[in-house]
Image (cartoon, rainbow, N blue to C red; front, side, top):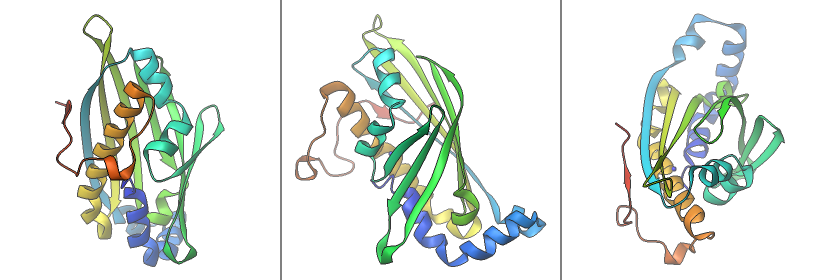
Amino acid sequence: MRKWGWAATAAGAGAAVAGVMTARWRAGSREARQAIAGRHIVRKAITLAAEPERVFDMWRDASTHSRIRDFEVTAVSDNRWHWRRELPGGRHAEWDTVFTHEQRPERLEWRSENGGPRWGVFHQGVLHLRPAHNGQETELRLSLELSLAQNLLWVRPRIEYGVERALRRFRQLVETGELSTVAGQPAYGQEGGRMGKAA
């Protein structure tokens, strides 16, 4: 889940068509609606050595995501976060996420806003938590529905890698209260732990 820098990757790839897509989308043209035609589901599941309430509260904290991802995440209001990442050449990628359903400590739903037409990436997500081992552990299931512009379909593997990485870092932060340095992190594909695709 840093290259949950997936949005930044998409932003860089989509910048060349940003103005055209935005204008067409706002005009409600059929061509613009068809441009966002690649819909993909990313599902991941992990088990954390912490109670569901702690897991939920840490996920719901914007500062957590600033630590586990390559973005500056700011809580604009109780149900809206703003995401921003600096890009080469003085550019930046940014968008909002809005929480649409919250049931602590079991379920959280959200969708992206504002950045979609500009970068050609939309997503909506669902976080589901379930207690395990007498409530001492938590099964976390994350589902993301991605809508990608046709010229950005190639970024999906990078998005999946970003999701996995962010989840590994989130588990480390929840269980230990800190994150290892870059030098101390195992290479991708070598980290142990309870990670898999959600059924």
